[in-house]
Length: 329
Figure 1 (spheres, helix red, strand yellow):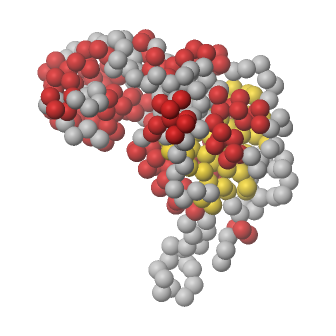
Figure 2 (cartoon, rainbow, N blue to C red):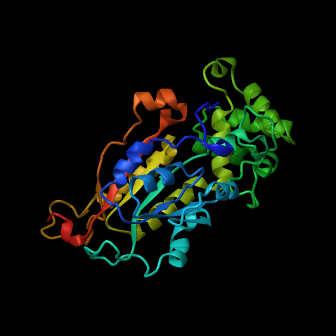
Figure 3 (spheres, one colour):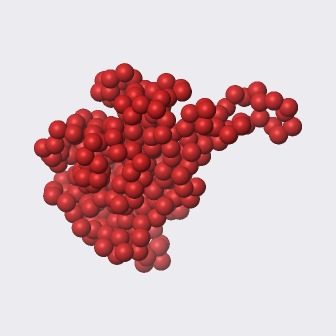
């Protein structure tokens, strides 16, 4: 279980906060979207570093609204970051930037967007939310407590084929079929403890000796409940479209599925012409949208990992929006 230090209400200490502040340091003014506000740790660090910044904070978890400090520079919107484009069309005057941008710091668009992905310590540590295999609670796992689909619906109604599919795809679980069939045989299941026991009994004894055997299954169910990967794909498109030239997109991810999506989209945005090399002229018309500020993901320092174990698996990627005039022919 994550034993990282926590902010009020159990929200985790923000991971790689110093690196986030550094990534946005060239943009001391303008609006930054904290698309995963949580306990507000990153937002507070960004505002402390630059008093002329403003933050539009988003979170689908209604508990996050209680963490918003009394600061006129922050506006909080309860929303899923999958709907980033729609939220920004309501909240940001003037709409997204045009193709060529401007040198005016107050031009349309955003100075940046920050994503700190995954589940928070607050959600894990609250048994009633049903996220943790270490704490007995209802099979819930909804980040938005008003959403219709809960973990119990998946565990108790989906056929074994569909369970095995998400365990393989979202949990990269090698015993997916065995676990799925055992769940179907034992259901209905009512609590996280019952599910964790069934999963543990379904896998060979040798597989229980390293990490808890339910870890990957709980991750897979949580991702399916919250449609996390498709939400991330939509949110990245919105962020890249709304960030103005010179602005930045910063993403912290915690497992390979998330990081793969982020890396693929940022690298695609940084690539130019895709025509075959023997073409005399470009016919695809593709130009880079982004400049990668670190081709390899940034990792937390050893000191941070020692102080905050949640940071251990973190990977941070940073990209800067560019204009057509900045592209090297």
